[in-house]
Image 1 (cartoon, rainbow, N blue to C red):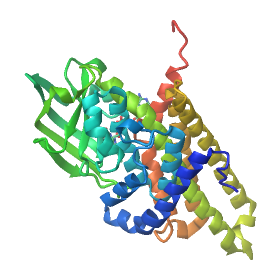
Image 2: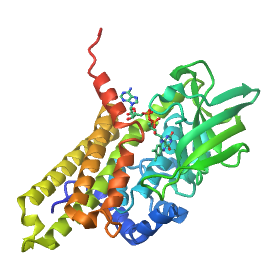
Image 3: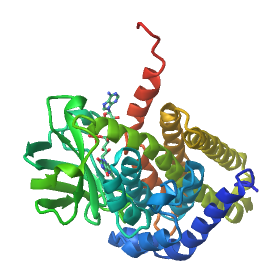
Image 4: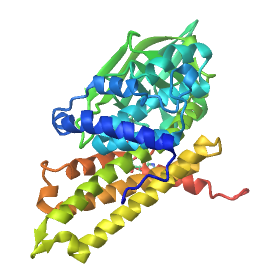
Length: 383
Ligand SMILES: Cc1cc2nc3c(=O)[nH]c(=O)nc-3n(C[C@H](O)[C@H](O)[C@H](O)COP(=O)(O)OP(=O)(O)OC[C@H]3O[C@@H](n4cnc5c(N)ncnc54)[C@H](O)[C@@H]3O)c2cc1C
């Protein structure tokens, strides 16, 4: 009742239940162990793929499920409730699919999308560098045209699941400074010169590996450039607009799992002769947590609905990302507080949820950058 989703369509509920059952049966039992050992299980992605959950919004004629972002966010929320890391993995593998579905040639689409959509292949989105995070358009990795191929050189940082990826969408400089000098390329794992650097030791989401990639004279055929030279940042930002809905959905799943644990604990933990839920200080905290979760969910669904109906959605997606990830950070921190000493231990999942939530305020454009995007939209013409 508290987490009622009966206002969703039958199709959305079906996808939600499919993802929930799989995540509870297959991911929840291994998540705590694998977070500690930093183990990513590729078979989980394949199994999610066999259920049709790794290519939900990708067009059916390229092997996707051809559904909308409302179904996609329902699935991601359910996966995230068991593991933020696997939700992020599905979301990141979705970025190359969005990019190729939108900008790819028929040959690029038919070669890469079906295997990504089915979960057979894993994809990476390769934009950030040590010197260019928020200011992504200042990237330095270079792509030099030599006859029928480009030669890529440079070092990329913080790349999710690069060590597992079969396909990389890489942004590199083909022209002068700024966004107009950046182009996008599809790199296959088999291309020589793609080297893995250090694997980051992270605060959370440890199942998902975050890698440095070194590109050393990687020969990429011209046919693997996406769209035209100079379109690279437009392509990256288009993917990130959609990606922000999936990051918001991940935040919803993490927050909901933390609230559920906190509610249960507040019911069974007794102090001063009664359940701690009966103390107004705890009950009001839980009430606020639930209200904020439901509000963020509506914001996220609004962004997904706009996208699904083909209307402009990038501001709505930025708003959903900020609201949902800030909510998840607050709610998971409060859940740790409600569990008291237990909340701070690894006996309970809420400390993991709190560490997972922090990542979401940083990736796919920090929450400050989202606020910048939203405030820029307020600019009146001529000012
Ligand atoms: C776990 C993890 C996974 C990631 N996965 C990927 C991936 O798969 N692919 C990829 O390309 N990148 C990835 N990233 C990189 C991520 O996108 C960047 O970390 C993020 O964009 C921020 O860049 P930065 O770390 O350089 O921070 P900076 O840009 O240096 O920012 C530092 C601080 O300054 C603030 N700031 C910067 N500019 C402004 C401004 N104009 N106004 C107000 N505040 C500002 C930021 O909000 C932040 O708080 C990942 C990062 C992490 C942590």
